Amino acid sequence: MLLLFNQLYMIRAPHGNSAISCIYALLSSKTQTTLEELLADVVQSCTGSRFDPDPTNIFTDNEKAVINSSHTQFGDDVRAHGCFYHLTQNTWHKVQALGLVFVSNMGAYILRVFILEGFCPMQGCLI
Image (cartoon, rainbow, N blue to C red; front, side, top):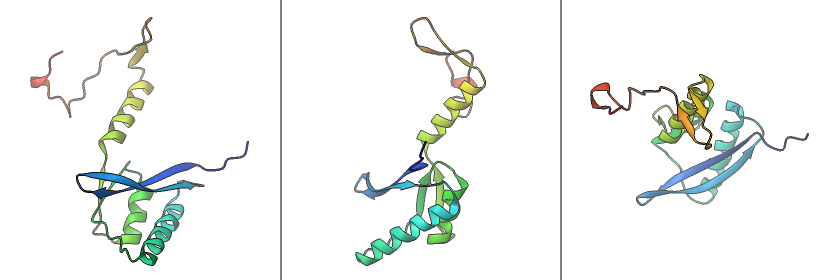
């Protein structure tokens, strides 16, 4: 089977009180080198359009290659933040991998026993 791309990479930018998707890239790999090439191309394209991208914050899925390539392209002052979507997605995958979930007769996912203390302190939980 021919693999055309390994990752769909999306870059969003702030716009008013929201964010817009402004770049979609089909990447052949998830390596730092590939991401650095992508960011260099983005900066070159923006500069050619008289726009100087100078982010102070990036929101990412906490992949080290993304953080490192951002620092390489934009400097060490760029602050990397994890996003809530990827945190919950990674948590759900870990819960499944630990066997804490089963599918009921009705097809619903049911957690066996799972308390995420970071989001629900024990004194505030209704179990």
